[in-house]
Amino acid sequence: MEQPKNRVFSGVQPTGNLHLGNYLGAIRNFVGLQATHECIYCVVDMHAITVWQDPKELAANTREVAAAYIASGIDPDKHIIFNQSKVPAHAELAWILNCVARIGWLNRMTQFKDKAGKDREGASVGLYAYPVLMAADILAYRATHVPVGEDQKQHLELARDVAQKFNNDFAAPDFFPLPEPLIMGEATRVMSLRDGTKKMSKSDPSDYSRITMKDDADAIALKIRKAQTDPEPLPETVEGLTGRAGADNLVGIYAALSDMTKAEVLKEFGGAQFGTFKPKLAELAVEKLSPITSEMKRMMDHDQGYIDDVLAKGAVRARAITDPIYARVREIVGFI
Ligand code: TYM
Image (cartoon, rainbow, N blue to C red):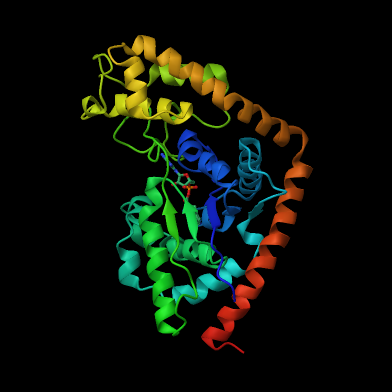
């Protein structure tokens, strides 16, 4: 079986509140990789239900992530967009990999600890096994590269460990490639606009903590105006951002949106007050995001049939890739 060389796989959970961190840390990079790689982009609805989801909202949010992919510039004719639950190999391979991964490995996952909080006993088994399903997502395609934000780094390391152990345990050297994380750009970890030491997240109770992919121009400007900063002007160099989390975050967002480095942004704005910088950032964010936001809205309001069609066709193409790989996995494991 031939080894793919440049196969990208990544996913986003349909849990609502898609935000600027998802866009800059992940989706924007998905778009760029289309020119050089064979790309498979998944809406991971099975991951979403590791915490309770209202079924109607899950369906709407699944379409919304697909719309965000398409509106951001992923071409569903050239590459694959689909939702995870439509391709059975994800769950089937996940079971086998659950038997390869060790409990000790999962016990080290910081995201489980964060998400389960104090009530670990009350968390779902699915939330605990979440990283193994993620490994299955990637390995079901024998993907070589995985673009993600910084927060997924530990899960990717686990996926590599699982791949390696499977190859060793079943004496199938190099069957699963060890997937490379691609953590790219100046905004690999976008922080909350209310607290520059916390990650921007879908679940933060404050709507002012994040810019979402549904916000209109007024909401974006207001949230940036209210973003937490400090009274000092912007520094001239990147070192000057140390200890100034709020400032560092806004400069990183500006850099990522404008395809500049933070150093270049500070060359332009070093010495400026936030009263000058924030309106410029808001203008830039609106310029870059509003075409995407309005195309998403158009699709969600008037073209859900198209979204469903993309997902259905994508799933057929995804299955055409996973079927022979999973058939080989069955042989390797000894299933008849
Ligand atoms: P999810 O849905 O939490 O996030 C989707 C993507 O957005 C990135 N991201 C961020 N990047 C920068 N700053 C932030 N504040 C920020 N918040 C989120 C995430 O790193 C991610 O790339 N487990 C994954 C989904 C997944 C997956 C996979 C990814 C399931 N299977 C296989 C890659 C390959 C997740 O929860 O993403």
